[in-house]
Image 1 (cartoon, rainbow, N blue to C red):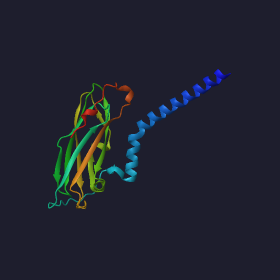
Image 2: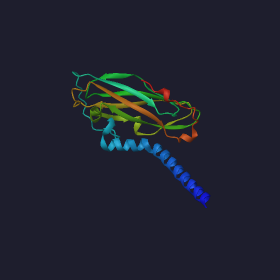
Image 3: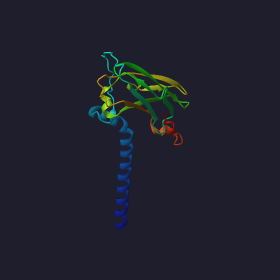
Image 4: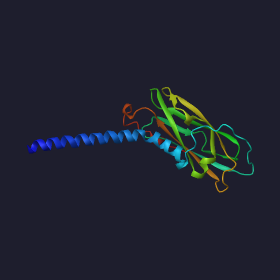
Length: 193
């Protein structure tokens, strides 16, 4: 009778641990979209609004320069190269600018990716308005395909004077499930500039 209780207890523990592992995997898989929603709602971590700004009055403040830095990262196991065409630029608040980001599918398979943006310092995010951005939609890549993806934006003239440098960063994620990628496909070293 004692052995039956141990067997039942062992099975129960095994089932609980298996359910915990599945739950943790599901949570990890959903973490990126949940994080994006959380940041969009709260405005935390420099997330820019997910909708493009449409009505923009263009009146650049030519007496003020702001340095804009570009930082790109590729999520672990995402089979892409991803970088900005330039490391950064100097801009005048109130003007419309464009930057080009380049991504390449490193596999021989069709892939779908999406970029998650962030702006730092956090106070600058409210003044950084994207007019056009590849991060608004999923990006489809044919095998080995390289894409040049524009971002059109404006840094509003109301940007506080103490902010003289802004960092626009993107993390590139593969939308495929991790199960169809071999573990040796760790391309996290493609973080760059």
